[in-house]
Amino acid sequence: MTQIRKAVIPVAGLGTRFLPATKAIPKEMLTIVDRPTIQYIVEEAVASGIEEIVFITSEGKSAIENHFDYDFQLDTVLKEKNKNTLQEELNNISNLIDIVSVRQKKPLGLGHAIWMARHVIGDEPFIVLLGDDLVRSDVPCCKQMIELFDQVGESIVAIQRVPMDQTHQYGIVEGVATDIADTFRISGMIEKPAPGESPSNMAIIGRYLLMPDIFRHLGSATPGHGGEIQLTDSLMRLARERAMYAYEFAGRRYDAGDKLGYLKAVVDFAMTHPDLGSAFKDYIRSACDEKT
Ligand code: UTP
Image (cartoon, rainbow, N blue to C red):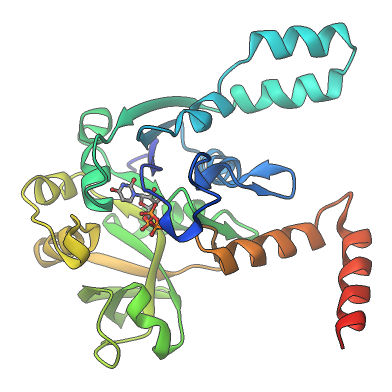
C-alpha cells in the first residue's frame, strides 16, 4: 500500500478578495477564534498522517513560516514568567511537523504554485490543501481521501454540491457514480464555467490527492481561465490518461479567503469552542433578538 507522506499547501496568492485586511497580513494568518486559519489546515494534515509539508510561499508571507517556527526569545520569557501552559502550546505548534518552503516568484496561478513543489515531492502521490480552505469534519477530510486512495489507488479531488447559480465560482466535475459510496469516476472537468453552462453542481474544493504524473502536465501547461496556470486544466489532462475520482467528503467546508466564508467559519468555530462556545451562543441569540 502506498503511503501518502507529503502535503503541499500553496499560500502564494494575493488574497485580493480580502483587501485591505490582506495588504500586509497573509489571509492564511487571519484568526479563527484563537488560531490562524493556516494552523487548522496544518493540523488537518498532521491528523491525517502527513509527515512533511511544503508551503508554496511568496513575498510578504513570512509570518506563516514564523508561526510554525521555534521562537527562542518568546520561549525564554514564558519560562521566566512561569506561563507553562502557553509555553507548551507554542512549542507544540513548532513541533507539529517538518515544513519546507518553496518560493513562487510570481502569482501565475494555482497550477504553477503546485508545480513549484515537484522537486520536494519527487515521484510519490501527495495531498494538496489550499491555505484558505477550511474543512470541519469528524474524520479529517485528507484522512477520508487517503482511506479512499487505499481502495482506488488513483488521484482524487474533494467535491461538494453547490447551488447551480454558484457553479461559475468553482472548478466543476462531471462524473459517473461508482460502487464506492460518495465516489464518482471523473469524465469531465471545467474551471469556472460561464453561468448556465455548468455540466453539474459538483464543485471542486481545496483538497486534492494527486499522482505525481500531474507534474508532467503542469510543466507544459499554458495559461487558462483568468490568464492563470490553472490546476484544473492539468487535472483534466491527467484524467484522460488514467482514472481520477471525485469524492463527496463528509464535513463542512469554509472558504476562509472570502469575507462571508471567513465570517461563517468564525461564528461556527466560536459556537463550538470548548471555553467560549456557550457564552458566544448566548451573545449571538441576544444580538439576533435585538436586531428583530
Ligand atoms: P485563490 O484564488 O483563492 O487565492 O487561490 P488568491 O489569488 O490568493 O485570492 P484572491 O482570489 O485574490 O482573493 C487558491 C489558492 O491557491 C494559492 C492561494 O494562496 C490559495 O491558497 N495560489 C493562487 C498560489 O499559491 N499561487 C498563485 O499564483 C495563485
